[in-house]
Amino acid sequence: MEAGADFLISQPIFDPDDAHRFRDSYERQGGSPLAVPVFFGLQILEQGGVLFSSVPDSVRAELDAGRSSVDIAVGLYGRFREAGLNDVYLMPPIRRGGARDYGAAREFFRRLVSQLPSI
Image (cartoon, rainbow, N blue to C red; front, side, top):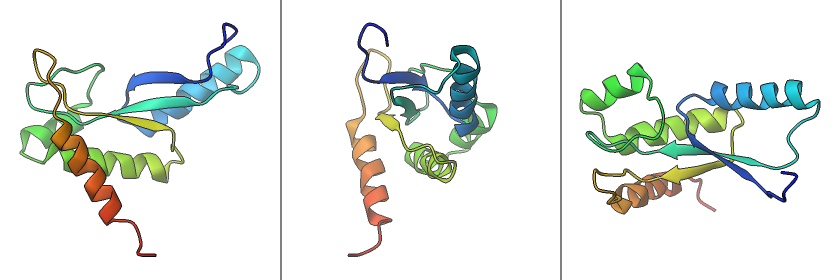
């Protein structure tokens, strides 16, 4: 931040408490709250896909049981919002070899928009 960072990003997280623990730890160590936003990763998982962080057994079990990866991500996003964690960025599924499944990301956003109240 001393070098001019305007924001920070994290690897994917699967529990909003991880974000709160990070912020609390930073404040204890640094003596003050972070002066820049932290965008926490929300990864849509895919069976056999590339992972960038540790995935809880409960999330793996949902995926292994056949629950849609987009359903899991939408549910996780809801938990983030309920916990007051609004600074997130979406990571589409990443397949071996690096290809991304942007269709899953579109479906994620389509579902979020469909949940918005009508204006």
